[in-house]
Image (cartoon, rainbow, N blue to C red; front, side):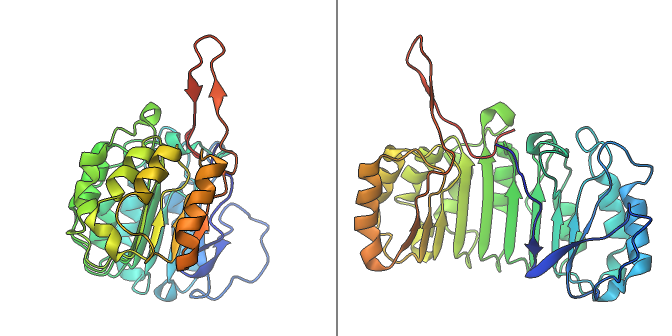
Length: 321
């Protein structure tokens, strides 16, 4: 499965496509602070660079009032990184004093598969914009995230079909005192997702992210191992939302969660896209719903394939390629 839809909202605002590639656009642009502006150019056929589209945007709106910005596709995103985009954003930082939310790579499958999106050193943007409260990035190819300190960031989302262990370690080692929401799509080894439980240890220990309330460790082929680690992870007691969805989650992983520390303090446990038996769904509901925990156990399109020759069962994450 691929990412099929663009962000509909970001930073608490509805998304709006800046018509950089539409010379016939004659409508009225929204107020600068009323939408999350998505700026992108055609991945395959465009005569305009992303930086040129961005400059056009800066001239067309009151950039001092812009609150949220979404970087869409850039030319040849499947083989070209966003260095030009990072340079353009950093050069314009004084023209964007009100920006609090930034997402890089809002690209769907028909433009470029998630695991083909070339990224760069994402923390350059966090360093350049110390007032950001929300930051997101999609794509794991060439993604780098060295440990960073950011005083105001409250929500961090990193979506990949395979997250390099070095990236996981960088996030885990970062000093983010205000972070309440962390969402990591870890992916599969086939697409570069080589992180293991040891790489997640600082996050699970709860010592690096003192304000964390929402933890998503998902879209992973090691989902059962993650759940086994969460069963005794100190961070869990502080959480309101635990998200282990979109991955290869089986009865073994849920059994580990249920036999570990109490989860009754959670407001929401998200397990959608899973490979659970009906008996385990019932057990989970009976254990947590009476305590008021909301559950999402929808299997979605999680379907197994079995090798006819040796009986090997193949299971898949929600977003891989």
